[in-house]
Length: 265
Figure 1: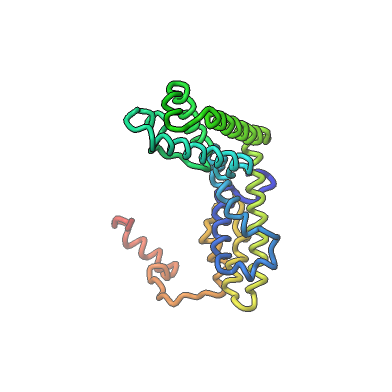
Figure 2: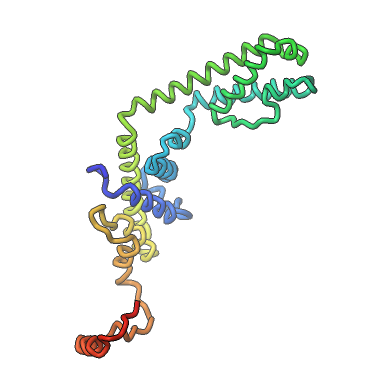
């Protein structure tokens, strides 16, 4: 836990999810009290923090999403692949070319590495069977367009990787995201408490409880802390357990009379 962060990362994630649950259906009431776009970005921040916490660095890249440039060139490349495959599928029956260019294979428009793989397969097939491509109406300019798409996607991916490497390290990035989530939790807690203090006091206390949890050094559970907050408003009508209401003398007498018995597990 970074010295600037209030909680362990797992607790921050749990509290962030609980904050989102409390906000669900109450966004209109809370928005005037919160920083702009906080409720929009918090789910993404929690998901990113969770991925960093579990050590799935590659997943973090996916969660962050493609940069605008990478997304744009990836989609263009994917459309090119689809067009070439369609031309081959319609006119290259029983030639083996369909399989070579990946007709029927799946790829994802927004996953640039799958688009790169699909483009590469077509370019490699063209090197081997240019005449078959020409017979399908695929001309040299089409192939040059494919090479351009390939280079653009590759360059965009390298820029994205460089951006990630330029961050000091994943730990620093994780701490920044964690601090952002914790700040959001604090803001939501105070906003919800003020908003519902008069109209829905129980809901207000749930918001307040978001920031009442212990730090890493305290091992109390979430439920234990919540129970403290609700103890003054919630009462139980359950009958007392006679075992737990023995007086001290009764307890001692019971211990003496039952020294030979096997204690209940």
